[in-house]
Length: 163
Image (cartoon, rainbow, N blue to C red):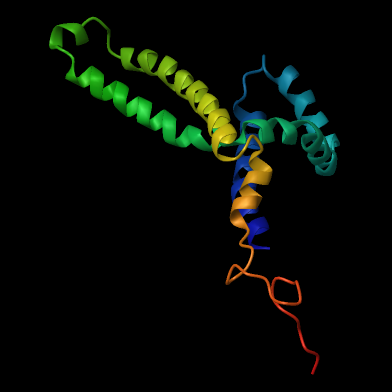
């Protein structure tokens, strides 16, 4: 219930502001393209969209999940390293670009960081999780027993006596 409430807190203002923009402020040249797209999206139930996402998107995300989880670590580190390198350069080398040049410097750094995170993710998956992140995470998170030994009855937790 709490999750649905937080989703509504995010979705309702976004939907209202999007509708307001489309009705009042959108350029007339965009309306013939946007209006049919919105109508098609409204015609598809969210269950159908979720089913299609489960069929198509879930296998894609599962394949690159470790890399996706590394992106928030790798990209900021590369951005900070790039800006630190630029700051430590001589004044004459920095003056070659115009104002706003840093943005064009960071675009390839961010794209390279995403590529590096995806490559590192596949390497981490192969080395640490034996090539299967789903089974590897489940295998490493499950604890077999409290004491590490089985009881004489063969079960993990011993035999239960009925009252």
